[in-house]
View 1 (tube, rainbow, N blue to C red):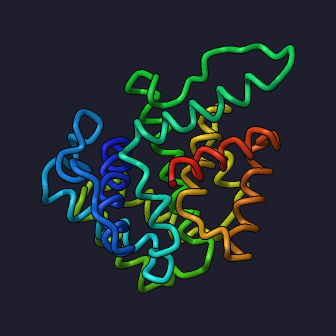
View 2: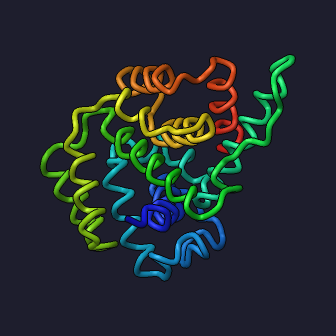
Length: 230
């Protein structure tokens, strides 16, 4: 299952899609080929299809509020850079703690990038369900859009299972194999959640608890998203 290219293109296409919904001008070069990480879905056709899938995940009523946050991500590498900065800043604040190099997905070999990508996509699907807007009809539409992107049976079975699961932050958190992966999953969730919604904010807080994020790290991750959205 090649989640890596799919997720990269979702983030890149979501940038243009949501900026247009919010009435902003898309960034230059933010659509089209996803480069090395996005070869699976390179080209304008893949970008348009990915934008449709991203739009369904977010839902029309959320697009205006979360559009600014999603627009800051140019793809997987950009998300990894934010996690790296947040994790590094948090480490620097820990007196006497070991200061190892954060192993975020922008600094990892391909096999590990794929593992991180699967965990992040799982977090995105769960965050999309946090306000309860995905009903059976929308699940079918989302699955149809992903099938257009990639008809790989393994990916389709995985997506179907994730969309139909009850929302469970503990299940999402179990996908985090490293602290850096947990940080990336949380950033992706913050990106998609409308924090003005009590239901969605509650989900985000419980996810952070299940991911065992230290309060200082949680705050630093949220700070990076806010700064990047300015």
